[in-house]
Length: 332
Ligand SMILES: *Cc1c(COP(=O)(O)O)cnc(C)c1O
Image (cartoon, rainbow, N blue to C red):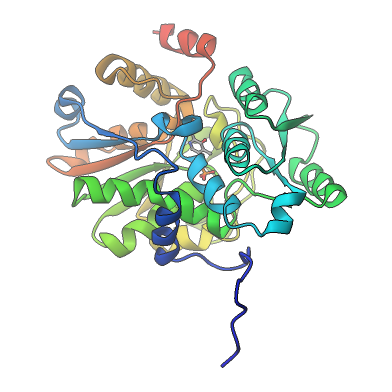
């Protein structure tokens, strides 16, 4: 038997399992909001199913990403904490890492695109992080981040392809299943797959009969293509209002979990996202960002097959620029 080190550093090559989600939930207790699960009779009647919306738009920093970020940061050793962290993100992961770092007294540098929504830039700076801007089309954010990290000794916290990030995100589904009991299906927004793979780990152990769907923007359906072909497909930065799902490919850790456990990956148009966004506002008084509407739009697209079913929907975030929000809602 190999001897175990007394205090193992988190190993970023380890494939996360259900127990990691359970452990993450323990670490996050009292730190993350246990977000409400809301329902709407109007939406249920329109779809012919019973829908349970897990409202991570009401999570701290406005999205589920705080779960994974805190779960990763809280496990850093004393030396890593002293040297600080670095992250790259179009927004919500940035805010999440910035807030988690602030709570833990860790310095954070965040690499963000020039065209990131103003509200996300302001919030990230507001949590005390240093922001480095880059051009989304011509520059490689991961490379910029790695270079900064190497120069300053910072630990890079990836937005999705990291075992503790995946485990943290999975706690959103764990809470949902604990709160509502049996579900026939669960619809989860999909970018790089941190949220989806975490939700799959939570669900496959707790409710193996629940069919879990990933939902992507149609313009950026790299996950759907990857699933069909059985190998990672990389695409150009997709043009979509779902700015949190403009990832170019799934991760090395997230893809195998998704391949193993997902029921299917659906793709929805920006117009479907706007329809869902308007429904959240009108029926539920909820402000949901375009990416946060992916799960709801996916469920809507499958209403025919969901008659009489109990359906979970991950509402992943609510950080939308108010001017953009008003403009999108006004678009009839
Ligand atoms: C990041 C993000 C996603 C996608 O999450 P992945 O883990 O990259 O798949 C979905 N919705 C919102 C609001 C996000 O911020």
